[in-house]
View (tube, rainbow, N blue to C red):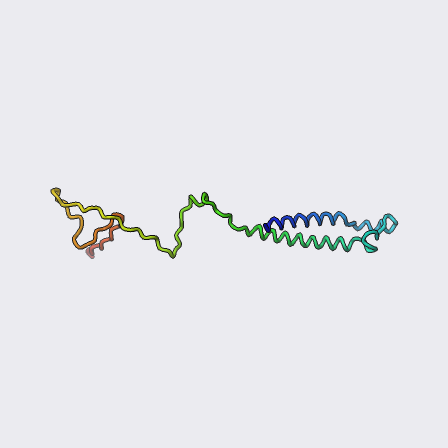
Length: 147
């Protein structure tokens, strides 16, 4: 909304500057007035239109420059465009560094294999907990070797 208002003001200032510059007389117009080629003090008095029109032109030029700076600032500090659900559908969620991952309940352990006629070893050693199916076994310490 601010950008639209500044753009409208910029356009109005530009039109006013163009109009005021075109209305003003040039430096050569005063030389012709000395020889009777025109009345120098018709609308704006004996001093001519130089002071009123040049002052208005300077004011509109200053407004134009300030408005240009404001438009440049507003244009460079645009807020981020809001994302839709379609924009965020392909992104992977990020977990903040300080938060812990949600805990997953352990799965039910598979039934232990029985040592039957095949002569297999028991599935677990008595007194130790059975590892869950998705866990990684702890590393065993290496035996010291010869030195």
